[in-house]
Image 1 (tube, helix red, strand yellow):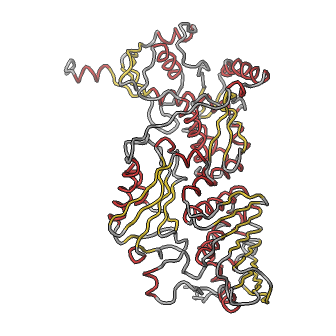
Image 2 (cartoon, helix red, strand yellow):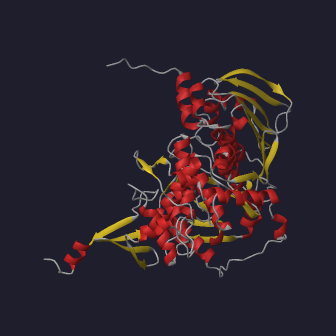
Length: 595
């Protein structure tokens, strides 16, 4: 057995810092929470290089005395609590006394602070957790903390950070949550010298939503006001027509603290039941006001997880708050026409020529029937998928006609499944899964051969993104372009989509793009291959014919013909079966024709 050692203070601080300081966004979160607790009415956050080399958080709060300023960087030093009884009545965002010590342990920190009671302020310089200089200095009331060269003394942590734009996106997301949690405070966020966020601090939550998400979202929000027993719920919920493909615009707060809670998410989504399509998630900003003694925030160092003394009570309060808001008045989606003349968006002659040329090239791509590898297996398959779309054209190629002679399409079942008689068996084909697989194989071939052809949109589409999603776009611009999208930044947290690889309606295009960003974000590995497959899956799914859609016989003939030319594949890209079969022998046995 190895000898037990007592770790020295430096190593212990580095280990503790790993729990609190995960990335630059963690630093910003802790410093802004301290500023809020100090009673600030105005908070400015400035970063450079994604916060890795420079973070500055300034506030006009109460400030610190020279004695308190030095103590603040010691572990477990805090002004928020003093005894164990205080843990049952926490009303501040911070209380552990770990943040400043953890930040100082892995960076170079400068502190400027002044209270009303002192004529001059205090300056402290800290490097790797040790105070190197402390002196009096002239500075305004409040506190300014500058953090430089994060993880300079723990370089192994640096390899886990992402690109500057992505890290900046995480920080911007933290700022968004702080803005929505404290509309009474004016926030300013500056990234590489550019002001990204500014809020007036007028205590109007809807104005904050407008500042962060834009006019369209703000107009579609419904007010929430509900109180039940010990829980009061206020805020706003979005109308079903602005629901998104992920939960990135869902924010819940307990006494001003942003939290993540499965109970609250389930309550919200249950209230929206029968109002949203599958895999659509509402936009909500909810504030819960609860007696601090009924909620435990001392669960994790990040303080984003909480436990409720009565989960059912909280669930019911949130459920009825959202439900009442949604049904307060009939929700009839408003349809608006573009204000501009659509001919202003017409592509140039060059663009029109490009589309025609692309379509002609597309018709010949599979002429050589090249080999390609399927994602579901390592076997090499010969793809003979026709590039013709499933049209209702009355003309068919000789190959298609010959193929049809080997089977007979009986018809469509439930507008979802195609029934086919083929020799001594009956085939039941899932039309969406089949078309999705065919579209995926075509996209995969085109992508690998750099032959994905974009379609110029007659009217470009503007899409509002979250800060994290915007960071993903900036980090993966080349990859997104290779998928067939042409996008540009269009103001804060907005993009304009000018070209797409498939033809879809505007709402579905917005959802498609967000789903692609989500697949990139949650790909299991950093491998570009994983991101490629996930993105192509999503595009194929959106372009495929849907279930519950009545198909013309000619469409079914083309779909079945192309499907039966695929070899060794009977699953859609997501793994669901495409075809199930029932032999004539089995059917006759069920009817007792065969004993």
